[in-house]
Length: 142
Ligand SMILES: [Cu+2]
Image 1 (tube, rainbow, N blue to C red):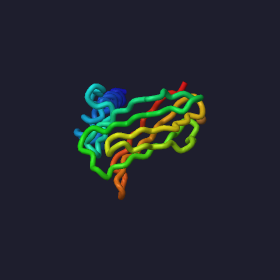
Image 2: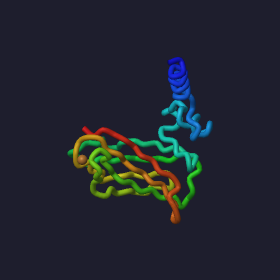
Image 3: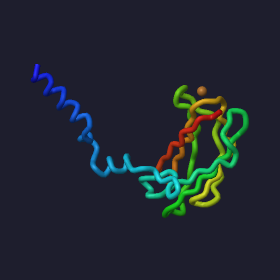
């Protein structure tokens, strides 16, 4: 009986420990408190921040508009693409329109959330050869 108790206690104490498959740096990154004043969305690969502002709010009846500004060292040949996705139902929507104002500024229009519920705006930041970074913005559409 004591043997089983000892196993049980050791299981509980392991459960509280940091998992072995995550490095200390990754653990620190994941558990860092978000400072929305400084960096709204951290782009880890680019070492940059994305600031997201709704110019027209997300609804299921009107097209929404989104402004994305990248802060950091953004290469001049950077472009951005965006995709709408409803994860709970596994479908997307019509293609959005991305207007590139500069390497670090993009206005996204024709955002049609075709039904209320949970949606994602999936952003890919690219150069001509590859995807540099990705960002998923989850939101509830009324
Ligand atoms: Cu749906």
